[in-house]
Image 1 (cartoon, rainbow, N blue to C red):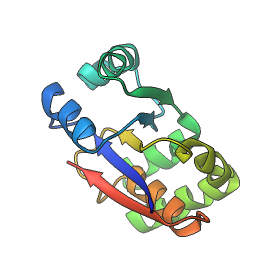
Image 2 (cartoon, rainbow, N blue to C red):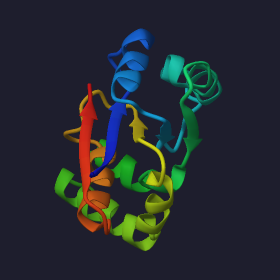
Image 3 (cartoon, rainbow, N blue to C red):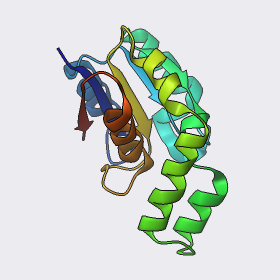
Image 4 (cartoon, one colour):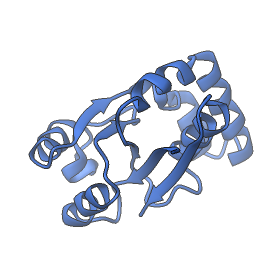
Length: 148
């Protein structure tokens, strides 16, 4: 049986929809992959609020900024200093450098994990790259599902 990794962004979702998507997918652990998880723009997804909400519905919360792109990579992409292709290369290189795969193997063990960021869809988001990197390099079969 394959391990499942899910991803979700909180933008363009109500709290009700967000929690329903997690519960319907059987998520047992949400891993917050944002650098900044306390911004006022995050609404219900601010660290303390999100941690409390998830506790109420029986989902573990972990903040793991080592799975986020560096501030420089993120700013360079947003300011169009680098293209999406360059962003992908830089971020994937960072994951390898940080030895994220070993860490992810531990995270997945015994849990249905969902990686969180802010983007509504996974197309141009680091959470998709993270999940695909794990899927391609993990010793076990991994299935990736994007919740949105």
